[in-house]
Length: 429
Ligand code: ADP
Image 1: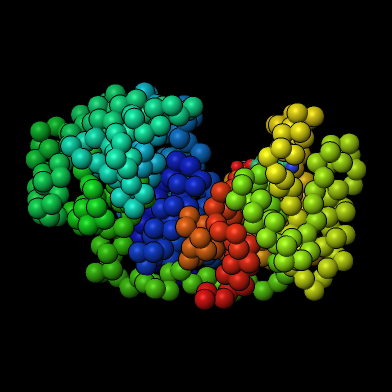
Image 2: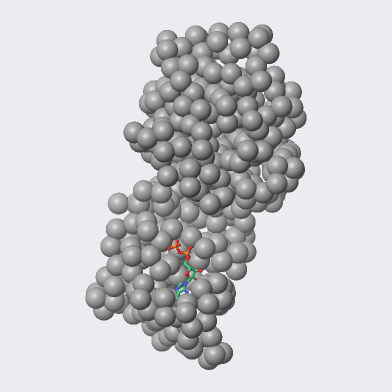
């Protein structure tokens, strides 16, 4: 325990967004812990972190609730010694007419006593760029990218100055690309000028990672920065010049000894492929029969007995089924009920296996991962190197560390399970 506190604290408005910015910080050389909700203060892995990312679920809740959650996260991060706070939202600026980007940014700025705050959602690696204050997704304007039809946060205007202004009490301005291209000193001067003219929030153009690094450099002394994951690219350098960061070692996780298992609850095409590959290789696999589960047969016990019968091999336990079979089950018992039953069963199985010394879990499915993590009482994750794009290896915080690979359904190649098991075993090759 260094006792020096973390350098950067992030408040992310959803879970996968938190993993995204945490992975970006690790790539930029900072030892990073992602917590699920507000972390436990005395956790040694938290105390040892150089960046802490608090994952909230505040993107689409009422603005007042989002503000309250974010201020609570801020309190924790300041208590943990963070010198710079990043409010992280989606690089497609997912928000409603009333928030929550504007209200949360303003509340954080007020709490930190900062008069002007940048908003830089650009994430060029994922095709999200901002030019003249307009957000592009690939070649399309935001409001023509499909995001205009999003069920919860329809984005019907690509002009972010206008979008943010509608959600904010203060005045929203723009730092344009020609200024960014001139370098950090010019960006700083433009921010000061905008502030003198009364602006409180500033959309900043960026179309490349180099632009984001310039912005990071320009804002090195801003206690609050807001943006997408891309903004994290330029921040660690500000600390590197003054402090020793972990650098390349940031992605190296503690080795976790114990047994391993693969749990699949995703019905996606990709996960079907990964399950098929496992079975073709004649590796042991237990299929959860959802119809049996629905009539109260002891499916969970059977799955555990299957695990116990294969102590010398890694076992896959899966509910994953091809789309037509899935539809039949859903028609018979209802999609939501079936989903909840499968998630509950996989959660119970995960917990029983942990009691059998399983310490490494590969989990397929976004909701499934949430259910498993909750059932295992995981509160935080040290983020390691990517196993597949968007899926880092992780090790949980807490007294019994678990190695976890949590993937959304459609992520990873056909051999993802094998690759993930290898990565979680500490083999970084
Ligand atoms: P993805 O990331 O692919 O969307 P999720 O885990 O988020 O995967 O969602 C898959 C949902 O489908 C979960 O609620 C899971 O419990 C449910 N599910 C998985 N297998 C079956 C099945 N055979 N029948 C019905 N529901 C299932």
